[in-house]
Image 1 (spheres, protein in one colour):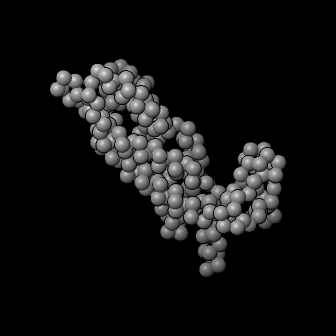
Image 2: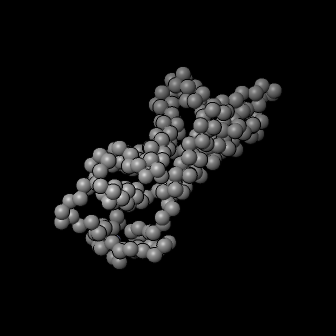
Image 3: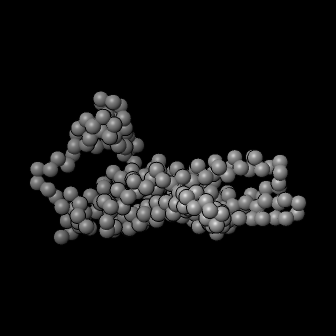
Length: 220
Ligand SMILES: [Zn+2]
């Protein structure tokens, strides 16, 4: 059981049992060879895999995503050249434009799903993984993991990217489109967030915390 920065060992607690996330079958956890995977015998779902460097990979993807998010918000997404008049816009400028033109709900949706949620997701990932990299257990880990899980469906950078691409195709006959630095950054950010999602597994976090707590208890 985890409370604050310390693991509390509970007597008679079945520490080596794992429930399948697909069919709920309870089974005993076994040690795996490097790169090995454990699958549920009933439904075949992958239960866990042995990949010691996974947290480091996730941290690297999250750091790259943080950098790309800053660039994506600091530079124009695209410019439109109509008869010599160039107009470039940032993501925040687009959100403000929607708000000022009475499209409040759409403005909030775009702002939340493309700026706030991805920023929160990346910030929480770094808050978890940077201290763990330095063998420090961050405070509030269970809350952060639960929040990450619940906000995940609301990050919609990929939908936003698709929307931009569709608009580009539709506008290309009427105006000269100048792709901005932020557009490429959004493309990279979409890939990095997908990489974070596929490499991150909360089980690795708990495993790492268990290892660190074990070390602390040995030193006491
Ligand atoms: Zn199963």
